[in-house]
Amino acid sequence: MTQNMPGAPSAPTSPDPSLAPAVEVAGLVKTFGPVRAVDGIDLRVAPGEIVAFLGPNGAGKSTALDVILGFSTPDAGSARVFGLSPAQAARELRTGAILQEGGLLPDYTVRQTITAVAAMRGARHDIPAVEKLAGISPILGRKVVKCSGGERQRLRLALALLGNPDLMVLDEPTAGMDVTARRSFWAAIRERAAGNKAVLFATHYLQEAADFADRIVIINRGRIIASGSVDDVRALGEGTVVTATWPGLSGVGPLDEALAEARASLQDVAVRGEHVEIRTTAPDDVARILLTRTPSHHLGITALSLDDVFAELVKDAAEPGQAPRRAA
Image (cartoon, rainbow, N blue to C red; front, side):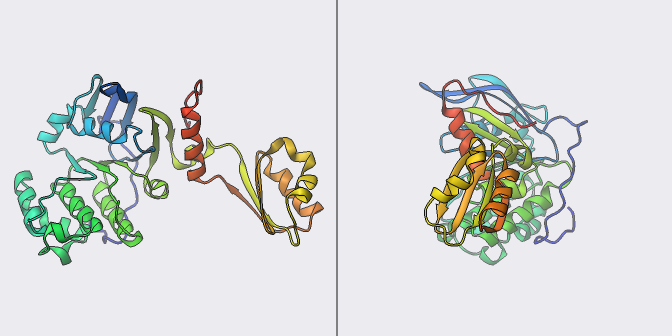
């Protein structure tokens, strides 16, 4: 175990391409009656890589993770974990997991829960370290039923870390945590993920994915619609946002008139009092017009947010005839 302080995340390490993939999914299909929850996805996670799995509710994230953990079997395709079947990898304690619900006995104390799971995983020696990393030392004597949602997630983190598994699969791991607890959580994950440990996590917090993942995979309606680094995925969004303050502006009319020659590049124009917000494919031209032909000041040019790109990708994927957009 490394000696970094829990509050200071370790620097991520580059995946080693010579090692077997931590996760290798090919053509995965999982159905529930008429519902095709996972529809032929391919996914590869390298040792040492932290991958965020994003998607709206019902996109197929949890179903895919269940297959990778060996909780269910696919109807078609395959899933391997370090070259093993998911069930075999679980038996060999190569995987650890944090799930959204369940898995905790309400009448056990936090200490009893950790002790019992550590005994089953042959990891009693690891108890002091995971208690410290997960930040649960102050609540060891508390019954699980008395723990808050965030405290239960920290307990699940401690359980997932026991034995230092090679792959951690986390389904909405920081649900119920405040900002401080979330940062401490990811510091602990980074500590244990150093080297060739891999992490695959599903989350609704897009900023969390941007802050902590090496790569983002977006899934919708059972299919992967985008994959790449945060910057790669953000670049899939079309347009840039130009903002400015226009003193005395009244309505959108004067702005429309000023931007007439750049109209073909405009995607969205919003005026809120004296605040102007323009989404455009020609930000330099729009900025020049605002600065030289209007009384605007406090000019700003920003890339689309990850939230904007995510919403756009999901919307496009839901429209008939739209092909998935993959990051390079």
